[in-house]
Length: 446
Length: 158
Ligand code: FES
Ligand SMILES: [Fe+2]
Image 1: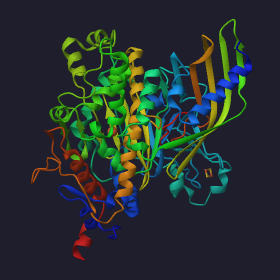
Image 2 (image 1 turned 45 degrees about the horizontal axis):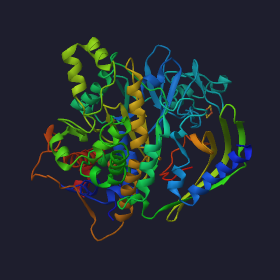
Image 3 (image 1 turned 45 degrees about the vertical axis):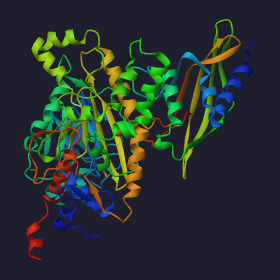
């Protein structure tokens, strides 16, 4: 095992054109470097503005392993800061979300902060007179994260100043978020409930890769989706209307040809999506009244364009997946090299019929929950991979499917839907954002 | 004649069928319109427009049971086993006139697979109806005390 710390070249050498070294999934030092470099260098999802409806509302999150929080300030603006008191480091907020009123108050010694993070008051303030406190970093209040963008209510933050702007980082990939938002007749999404949480004993990247792994559903999910289709056929015959549940499970059993032609689109910086021409979400039955609402809001042509875009899974590098057509965001939160917390959020389409929310909630609990049979299939594969990768016989993971010699990285392209190119795309971005803030000149001279 | 003891016996028998993996006999305890519900909120009221861990009708429960035996159900190689430790059920309603039979039972549930063992605590609520001489499950509701914590796979039934 190489020594990876401060060794950009060793890290880059883990990613070949169509293979990656198993250390990216199993090496604890690589995981530490991801926490210290990859996550702070990337634009990471923090939360949704609807969770901060009123001034004084706050949410907490982690970027890599650093605790952060976002709040709605008195003037309506959204601020993101480190969730850590400038006095002795106590976390200011201990719950996933809440309302603090006009200011935050640290529970240890009662320093207080405005909802934009700035220092409001310290008890017995005169004890700091003549101490030079004015120049201390503590005097600035809660340390603010400068690089924050709220894009159509999605809050993203980047901890490091590495010069990669939000626009450059995400580029055209934001079109999936656009489509999800536009599926509301009012152009608005709302988080109205907690996410489903699901603990995985595997590396976080296995989950992200699996989002565009179109050669596994008909194999790994034969047990769940295949059984659902079989039981439905036997119990109900073919005459009756297919229930919503079977409509959701059934398409997982689509054959290879279906995924081949539905396509994958890749974008620079590791983003990409499955389901270009159509997807497993294409053939759900219409929900009464919805199309009429959309036509009234957007006009006939635009409404059909919006609803005709049924992308399957969009990966926002490094660790988020969005499903516009069923209004779900999965956040793959790294805990340890072999431990990942998945939080699956459902957005309500404001103004749309309840039935759409019902379907999204159903999809969420069917496909990614501790109690989901599809989830059971997937987690079993990740756990086996996490174990299997410890073997030394072959130390490389093969991502060669439909690889073309010299294929360019960091481009936009639409390709065969069974390609593993989006995984290669992610690893190209992985090597880039792991090392973008490392000094490579020194090592080159060594 | 359905008495409080009939309800209590039903609750014990249901747990026993699960622990002994008599899946078909367990499914037979459900009314055709029966549901199995695992809420995801404290004192949750709505299984449809609020998120749940599970809210399944008989068709979906049959899928689960059939899947457990599937040749290509890899997450059941090795197979899971479970154990229910029940407190004496509390009878909430036993009203033959109105056809209302309800119990609430505090439990500790253990699910194992291979060398793994997970333990859960919560309350099971049974809403039962009379069909002929038997009671059938209209709703089995399972509230975990820590419903909001992230779990690994829960593959059997609490
Ligand atoms: S640690 Fe926050 S006030 Fe002292
Ligand atoms: Fe899967």
